[in-house]
Length: 370
Image (cartoon, rainbow, N blue to C red; front, side):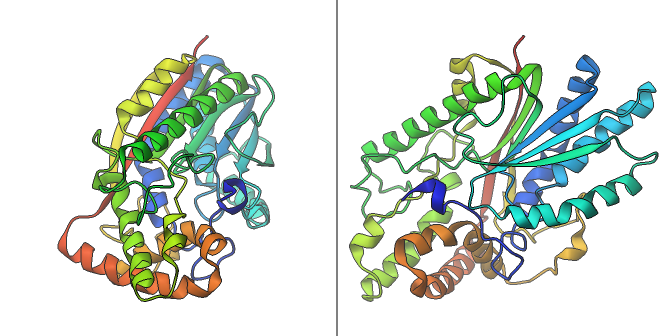
């Protein structure tokens, strides 16, 4: 699997699009709002930049893409009013892999800027947007060109499927039955990727620049625990059921592995300490239910976009389809997709009716050392 080619969320605004199935990700973004406000406030007050460069890495497309940018600008404008400063100009860089639906983002920018001008009393400073297609596991920006970097629900994705996981039979990710060499290969790939990510960002951020990262992770130290693996184990169950009925071949499942790793807080901290360019100001763990419609109270989002659907299995299956469909199509072909997700939905509904099912997020606030 060439990850850069097939790892992208479903584009457009259809039923299976990421734009319409990203409520879980929105909740994770909302939960980290106080940390972002702390980062932006301390950054602005310590540097007073006349031109503020903001990068969102793994921006995807849809309603989540511009939410953090809007929040950052509003926070800075409030500080400017309070300190009687002139608004800075904003340079906003939106990064994702080339398969991302950048057109959808660009079509919404004009209305986004108009809305922001009306929402902020006195208006905002000039705002310039750029799309930056490419992997964030490489240099993406010039030296010391960024003030603030944000990434949410992106860094759990690896740059590639780890090597040496051919014996992960019957699994599509880590699970309780994964051999120890497979677990080790996944962790070591995460270490390499995240360490290199930090090294690249350290070169691109100004001294004293801030970075807020929210990573889909786990609470405990067992990489094969349900915290990070269960959602994929249940998809593997659907695929293996289709193998037993002769719909797909066993070797197809055995050779399919998800390029993801859900780290613990201590694993994230360890790589930050080892790489050495950043001070760690905050690390927090939060949880969101698999079903994004559970206990949804709108938070800061426009909840009228969503009609609360009672079928939890359907909601979660659609959320996962928006994320995983391009990878599944690339490996298995399009013909099985409807069948896979129909079965997956039933399995999810059964499990969710019997146990509490949650995603866990690791959020860190880092400052580029001076």
